[in-house]
Image (cartoon, rainbow, N blue to C red; front, side):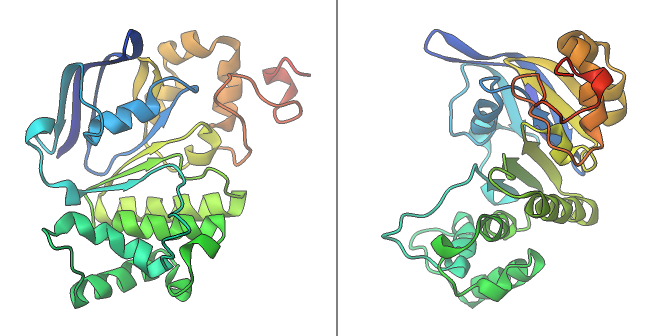
Length: 272
């Protein structure tokens, strides 16, 4: 089943081009990593997919429907870049997770016992039920991400979109989040679309890659990525280093195309 179809998509902010003629598809069961430098259009693409920005040119289909006709937003779970509720709104972890049910309700938005049961179930799945009564703002970064992941998953979406989900997390928390998402992807055939700067974060989990730098550099499965001439042409001498980190747990910044001193093998890096 095709979940996302993007065809000849372009977008500009005023006179500045953010995306140029992008086309790709995402199918049920895909675990797709979207990578690219800062300013490459990754978050713009996600906002277009979610209807938060209006397309300038091109077409987007979700679940076979044109974006303008798509209404079943409960089918999509979205974990945005790290955000914290205002301190003047002292929500518990349970309250924050339960907010994901709002997309299924009409006015007035009143939670019922079924909502409470589903919230408890999904918080148990994401291993955050034990602190459900604590204030969200007082949780650690890793705990907050688990709660926000529960909010994104509460309607059992067929598409899960994660925008930099590992930002400010330690390596253990990163692994826990991605292991959890990978398990859901495999067990439920949920399509996952994850934005990250670091290929080492997601290399062992994804089966497809989309590489953006305003235009589409590459879109395809992991095996083709590893032998792609487009990737070799784009990254040049950095390509072996990128591949070295594909299955690595080490952190290597993707954004500027260079690694930090000491983070990689001597033959792959000009720092040595």
